Image 1 (spheres, rainbow, N blue to C red):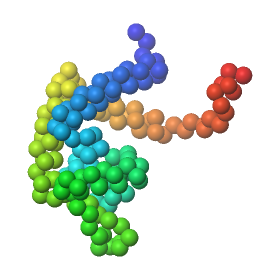
Image 2 (tube, helix red, strand yellow):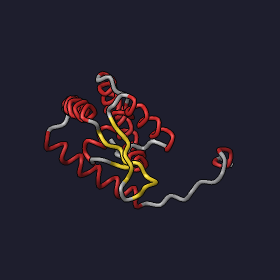
Image 3 (cartoon, rainbow, N blue to C red):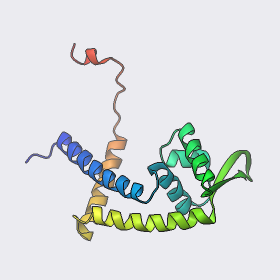
Image 4 (cartoon, rainbow, N blue to C red):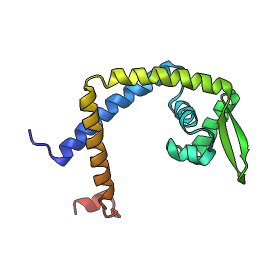
Length: 156
């Protein structure tokens, strides 16, 4: 079988979707939404973090990250505090309840992701990570001219 760029992209897409669906189903089984889990995970591993930085890290818009933080704050899982170095910014901290929840949830999720990726040996995973990083960096370095026409101009 020929491994063209388009074939590789399709295989990556399908594999990503399968692993993503597994991850989302597991996160929902924990009683958490995906964005709430992502926010709590950032705070667990990065520590207190400004709201806008969390949004960038978990790929949420300004409005969506605010809604997520509000939701988590209502559940007493996080709290907003003034940033000591920038009075305009708010830093989000895990509460004790939030830390307990995400530590337990993250441990369970790590086990679920081990199961999802068990089709690869440890050596396969090391090789896959190296190859995917290489692919990602290479793709990132390539510039693609911005397409400015409508769909009809593709075939005219």
